[in-house]
Length: 178
Image (cartoon, rainbow, N blue to C red; front, side, top):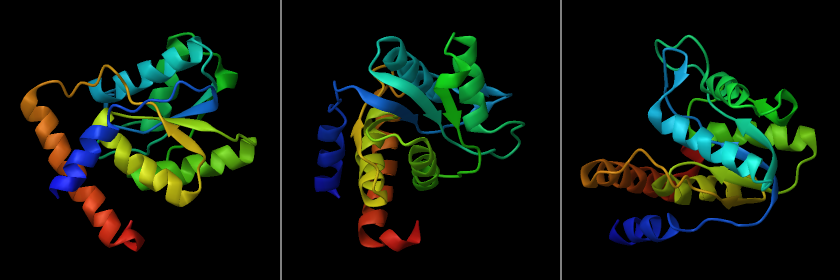
């Protein structure tokens, strides 16, 4: 578990500078039809990637959470539209319930659109697991963690890290149970 924690921390600093066809934004909570602060920072990161020309399109992922009115994918789409991203550069899925499903559904969009290389956008400590899933699913991806993660305090980062150690260990031991 210590080795996994170390890998997660080390991996959290890796970010691709390469251009890609699109950014895949992994979903997070929606509050009253608006992205949560965590999700908002992921979306803002993808918007910057688009505005700087590093990606040509953005895929938002995530289904409808408990007590939510809209899906995470739709909330991401609406937020990006309000930030000036053209509708033609935005794709989304709205049925996934976890990170693995986010990436499975994104893979379908990637295939349907004929995209080749993508950047995965999420929080830094989430990247190691997300990239393991992407590789196993067959997505040609590189990491692009947000630099403005809402997980700033020591305790919030430690809770996130422990959660990621648990899920990554679970996946490495029982990969078929996703």
